[in-house]
Image: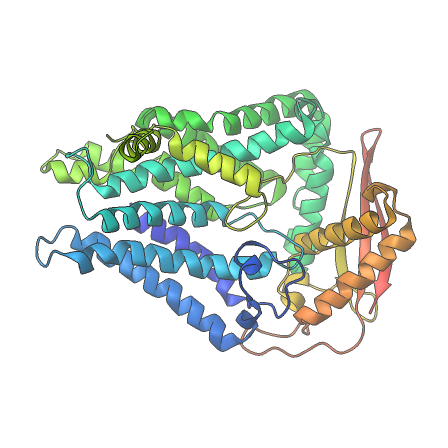
Length: 301
Length: 160
């Protein structure tokens, strides 16, 4: 599970190949609280990168040492929350700086929220310095439990905003999405001027123009899916179902609009589909501790 | 209520199976766009018209936006949107009613902002960046859907 979360962080890393910006046109996120323009200095930018890497290493080490009975104690328990906090702060600093240029990108909020959620759970565990109330569950399970809720909330909020801004008219007018498809297809080309990107959505655009009824059904279903993401909290099978549907939704959006959310997809794979759980479920159980490590979506306690 | 009673009630709320879901949803919807929170408003309106913007070099040829600015073309549209919103607020008008002159003003501001952030030649690599000389233009492309046909209308708004 931790490895999949780390995959999400690593998939965010390519944005580090960019740079920080020297001005904040409209400060957002952490940039509202502190100046982030120092990220324009490449040295400091690399320092933040190292901070995120250090966070990843601490987070993984914290997970590995859970299986080691000795040395126990406060330092071992500190690794996980410290790692999560470092990774969260590093990602938030860079994204806040970038989003403060009058343009908000929506690819990494889910990752940052999951890291924040897990950090809160593990800091709580560390500061309370005791086992969870339910003796068969570990703090790891609580981290996963709240991460599922956070992820489901991200999709619910996206659906809610559509209803709030457009109501049911969003579904009725959904064939108009072709104008956005033309836009995102052209933007995809102008980002790089790579000829292979030119007109890459033309086939889909023609299909959408010719099948408005089917488009309404598909788009309506996607809205219902976002609003019902909360069903993932009902148990591992529901989470699996919602997770697969969301993966298909992301795949469809990528194909028809060239909008990609790879980090979200990894998080869905980790927490909703919960790949480790189903793999371990297929393996004859040796130790109850292993099963607990890949907890179900059902609430602990 | 005693302190212990409040503590118990708080623990009961936290242990509710959907406590994290409700809390995250409420925070995202109230805090809105403040990383890591967001109300994820993208594509929550469907309209028969939309637009985008791209950069051109001194000869009017398109520039690969991402390579020369580290910004995506989508981000430039968002920057224009925010600038237009500011102008609309100054004029006490809705954004859609702004005349082309105001769009030109917004485009000039956005180009100035892009210059501040850094503009590099298309040959630049990540390890070696060469600042771009010469002027750049910002082209506005309107997209509309009329009678089942997609129409695109490009217009250069500003040059800097």
